[in-house]
Image 1 (cartoon, rainbow, N blue to C red):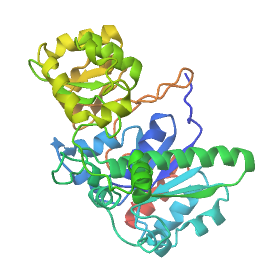
Image 2 (cartoon, rainbow, N blue to C red):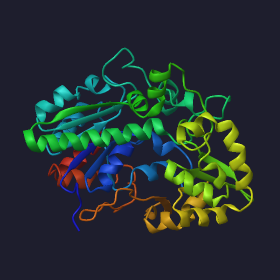
Image 3 (cartoon, rainbow, N blue to C red):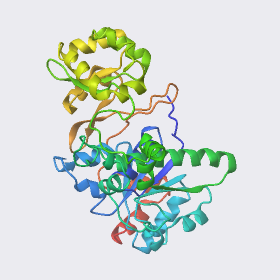
Amino acid sequence: MSMALENVKVLDLTRVLAGPYATMILADLGAEVIKIEIPVKGDDSRHFGPYIKGESAYFISLNRNKKSITLNLKKPKGKEVLLEMIKEVDVVVENFRPGTMEKLGLGYETLKKVNSKIIYAASSGFGHTGPYSKRPAYDAVVQAMGGIMSITGEKDGKFTRVGTSVGDIVAGLFTTIGILSALINRDITGEGQKVDVAMLDCQVAILENAIARYVVSGEVPKPLGNRHTSIVPFEPFETKDGEIMIAVGNDVLWVKFCKEIRIEELIDSPKFKTNPLRNENYEELRPIIAEKMKNRTTKEWQNIFDDAGIPSGPINTVDKVLENQQVIARDMIVELNHPVAGKLKVPGVPIKMSKTPGCIRRPAPLLGQHTDEILQQLLRYDKVQIDKLRNADIF
């Protein structure tokens, strides 16, 4: 079967997480992603653990379906090679600190003169404009500055970083959306453009109802643990042998829930009949539910709620996620066979498409693995030209 992005060529100058996550999505959907890395050292994340036979599992998990070429962009000939490649591709993605590409003489204004149709996507901590533009940033920094840490954690406890790198990953997702939107626009206008995505912007964009609550009430949102800020009951409860997450998202589900846990007398209670009332009387309601939930095991409640159509689920540890039948059925755990590291399980492709499905075609590349192949196929260099450049330490 064909793939959605199989005719799209991407030059990937990114490293670590935000940029590589974006280009991994493009690669999973069929784009030819050519990862350009620093000679000898490569992507910073090649040096992040854990390691398998000397290869970074971190790097492997984020760079599947890509090809790797090493290129020294500090040398004039290295820049010349890159500019030749720019003529042949659709997209270039970078996540350097703003100004870095310009210092190299490879900023958007330069590249669009070489290829007016190029989509230039830049993912950075604070974006290419504004007073913080030149500041460095990592995931934890933008989680802190973007407000998400201030609403995460136990009630009355310290603010907590989200357990996965949402600062980077959300920026990667928005960068991908920007690239795909620019490609669609180019199909209409014939013109490329610059996509500027800031990690801080993306954190603000996902604050969801926190900003709405503050704007309406004037009260600064604080962590509430696992409780939802405006829906009740919508949190985990202890069972006879563990915990189960309950999500009673509307009043119809509330009626079903009351019947299943045997608190029918609360269905029409003037204190609990509607969601606003349940919020208002939360402190009185929670202990009533909590007492009932301890009467059965997590599995027993799961079966009961599944039959009743009430959203619920166990709090799975990562090992349980990898064993989950739904996760497995959706091909969300895939085993790669890396040429050095060997077999390694990684997350699958979450976007399911009926006619042009994405897939994992190859493991993450070794450093510079495809240098000769790319130069021969994309730029039509012969062996003599390649050897000459290699002897000049361009690769």
